[in-house]
Image (cartoon, rainbow, N blue to C red; front, side):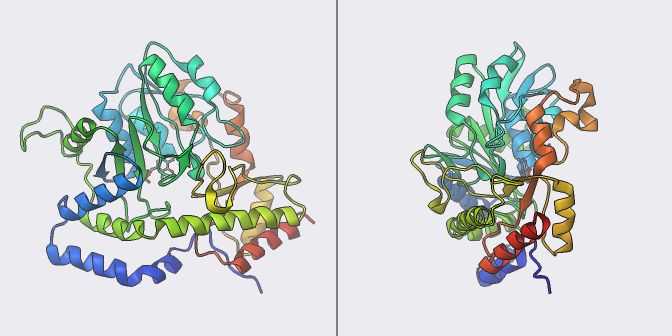
Length: 381
Ligand SMILES: *Cc1c(COP(=O)(O)O)cnc(C)c1O
């Protein structure tokens, strides 16, 4: 009886682009050029242009993109990097892996992004960088973050893993900080066929350092002025990403239309503003408003009463959901020695308890969206 609605349906997407993907993959096999090379360069140029950046450096994952940006800046033991606790682990994990200390500031409850009012109080003599996250596909308040960074001489690394093509005041994610990072993890809006990522920048000099560090810090080959690593992007991933990039704007429009549809379905059902709080975003249809912001809806995340019971009910009804993220970083076991306790970041903790992501992928049909909202209605009669 139930209509199954998965959280994400990559098979539905592949079906629409199978011929293009298969041809691109076959061409890489024909070339037997698997590491760096023309396919990777073409992908870097295309993604950098899409992000309105001067250069892109393909890397092995969105996680390694963050780590690489920190490494080329020489950030390590004794340094501090300001970020948010309400994010995917890689944001804080990359900082800690350099030996630096992640210093958290809470999120703005409306956008789930960094509360910029709290940043300056977190700056100390050890602060080297600010790492905002553009969560769920909506850009953080970058004009304020860049202003604070310039005043205090700090580097800005935008974690844009969920936000390729998103805009704030006409500026694209990744183009406003010193570095922007993207992930090509398959569930991201621009996903590869495995792991991959990219660092974008407005500085050719920074791009050159990124290229050196992603290849063991060698310059020239077998001579090592730096200790880098193997953070390279596969040609196969680059080929898949380059095909998908051609479809990304159409997929983004479909995600925005799905979000607008949910907004009205939840309102019509009388749930919005009651047991269900809709995500705040700057106008949905077309994704543009007077502030020229563009939300790309990597996720459509609701705050809900009795979230865990709701989620069990939705699972029963065949509706896929996920919690991004159930435990904020300051409460993770591995970060206990940072010394933050329960209550340190109340907005992040509340969000972790209330939020649920529902299916928003581009191929989601109207019938499926209605089935999702009907399942909510059945739970909150
Ligand atoms: C996915 C993600 C990453 C990590 O990307 P990977 O390619 O999976 O390593 C980093 N930050 C955020 C916010 C993410 O969503």
